[in-house]
Length: 393
Image 1 (cartoon, rainbow, N blue to C red):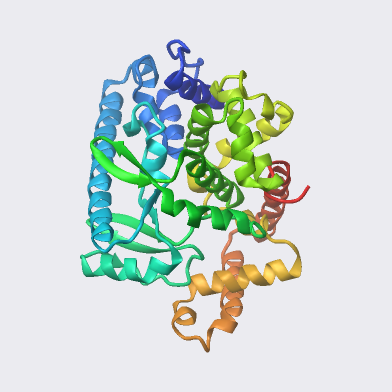
Image 2 (cartoon, rainbow, N blue to C red; image 1 turned 120 degrees about the vertical axis):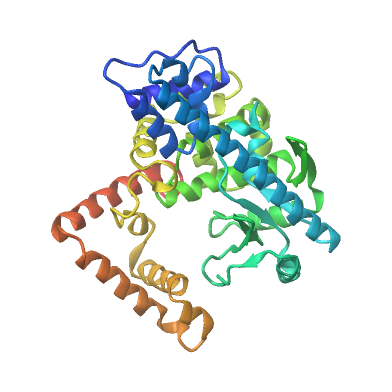
């Protein structure tokens, strides 16, 4: 009931789907809470939608106030983005925006999308220089080297920025994708949203970024409707008919192609993406799409509906003893600042992370029950991940 209502709201945003009629017993506040969990609360205010179906004036006013704040934040993000781009342009450092406004430009109204931070990329050769230039210009360095394998953090005027040397989510064993982004950095295009200009990758390369981002969220247990909608709008604009042939050649990886076909078929079945021109995803089984819908509704954007309640996010990506050790070592480096600062401690980061894991398990009220839930949830996520190309089937 709730999932079908959310899907109808999304369909109505991009098509003539008629006015929303809530099922009996489903409260508008419950639907709005779900839209928030999926990072798409702006969809509640569309004509003929949830706002019109809400008879509680105080609740409707609260939604409107929240939307004003959300859109004001977007404007502030664009201002900070302009400042960042100006600093790097003055230093002659080629830069490109990832996700964020580069996804928002695909929307009929970019302000409909919600935004959290600013992701941007420079070449590995320019990374240190770009970071130093921004710090000198007043951007606060988060001093988080080693926490992530593709970016570091900065803050400016209450806005978080992530300085990338490559997009996140590039699968292992795909050197062609790594080379694709570095080469495309020399062929960026100008985009404009709400009077703010910024550099973006060519459309097909921008689509690869959005796809890898969705894969990363799926692997980490946090794929929400926002990432799915980003993908749908890109696919609708560029991948019909022969567009898919060009795009799949860029991917060059069957696993990533499988993710793209599954997401596209999901959008056809539930979100109103047309059938015509997208015959290339027709072989995806409806059962896989149904499992994906269950997954998205269960976890929400960034897994916020279940975050902190399960260890399945870590376990679902681990393969064998070597994979488990890599998880512990990587997690230890991320969480143990001393290991990042002192090379002598770094080889023992896995011990630190193992201790953290044991402490988390032992502090749970129902240890046996929570471990059993973790294992069942891990099996469910692994099965979905295998079906959608995250892992070999």
